[in-house]
Length: 165
Image 1 (spheres, one colour):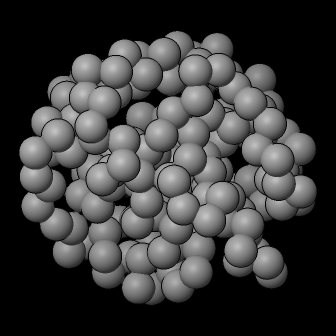
Image 2: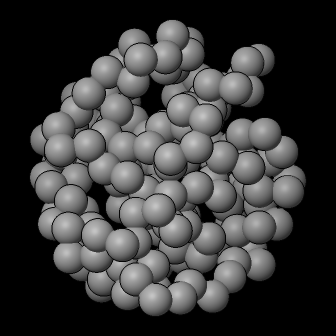
Image 3: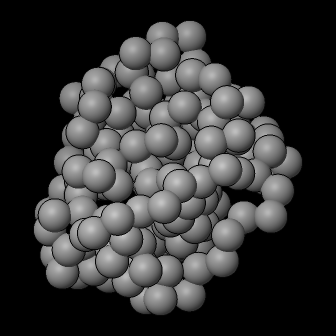
């Protein structure tokens, strides 16, 4: 997926979230109106930040790596030794990863990978605005749950490791 396609999907996501303003906090998905600098040295230079979880500086970026690749990176500044992880090869794949737990919970993958995978597998029942927003995101982007998050994340992070240094 090119950066232009990712930016187009991000505009769609902003529209969805604008319909559900009360959902940003419970989902951990606050979106910037435009790309902005993260303000953290731990964010890879190739990344353009588009959102954050609302906790401890954790933020999401689109990485401009190659003409055809724009993976999504979560940066957890407080995980000093390894603050970055690719959490989707595209915005849609990232959104699908968070469908069962929201996006705040994805930081658990960076701190404690196995516990993060367990949380994703178990999921939880969204209520109120968060539930409506997740359903709207799922329908807007025709998302399907990840089948094998462990192997997919390992593949993506190996693929993009050099570019994110």
